[in-house]
Length: 286
Image 1 (cartoon, rainbow, N blue to C red):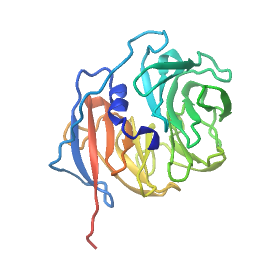
Image 2 (tube, helix red, strand yellow):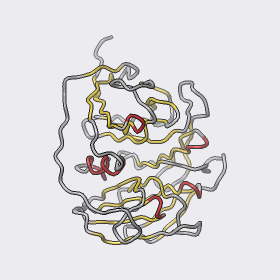
Image 3 (tube, rainbow, N blue to C red):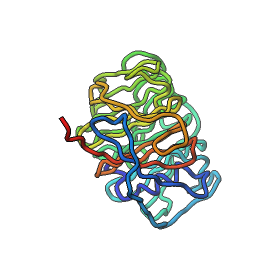
Image 4 (cartoon, rainbow, N blue to C red):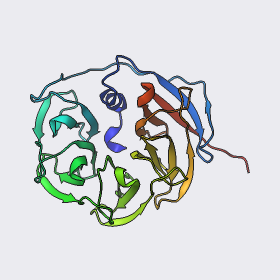
C-alpha cells in the first residue's frame, strides 16, 4: 500500500500497543496453492526509530489507537478509536491537528475504526457504529459520507476495514457484521459484493482486514475463524490457508494484515500476541 511504505513497523507497533515485545516469524506460502504453508529460513529484523504519545484526550494523546495511514509527503494519520477522532502528525510525530467527536453528525464518529488514503490525499474512515464511511480532505474537512445501516448494496452493518486498491483506485470495505466484502469504484459507486455467514470457501465469520498483492488479488482475514482467504477482484475464491493454533503459520483471532511491495503478508496474530510474516513462493510445477 502506497501510504504505508517505509512505515510498516510503526503500523505494527500501533496495532499491538499492549505488548512489550513481539515476535516476527517468517513463513512461506505458495501463492498458487496458499492452503499449504511451510517455514523458511529467513529472519526479518527491524531497528527501533522513535515513539510518541501517551494515554489521554489531549492533542497528540491516544485512547486505543486503531489504524494508521501515511500520505505521499510522510504525514501520518491515526484513528484514535475511543476518543472518536482522527489525529494528524508529521513524519517524526509532531502533532498537526485533530478532528472529530462522538456522535452521528457529519464529521462525528462512533468508533472510527480503519482508515485509508486515496491517490488525491483524501482520507476515508470506517465509522463502525454509525455503519457508514466518511470522506475528508487532508485538513479534515468533511467531503462526503456513504452507506446506511442495512443489508442492501452499498449499505453496511458495522464495517471494520476499508482499503483502496493502489492499482485501480477501487475501494473495498469489510462489511463485517453482514459477513461480506463490498467493492466500489473511486467515486464510491457500488460495483459488487461477495460473501455470506458460514465456514465454506468464500463465506465469512466476521471478516476483518483486507490487503492486495501486486497481482490484484484480495486477501481477507476473519476474527472468528483463523486463516486468510484469497479472491480475485470480483470475489472469485482462489484459495486459503491457516488453522487455529499456536504453531508457525497457525492463527488465533487474526486482526490486521498488510502486504509489502515484495508480496510479503504481515498478519497481526492477536490471540497469540505476535506478528507473523508469510512470503509468496511460486509453484512452477504443472
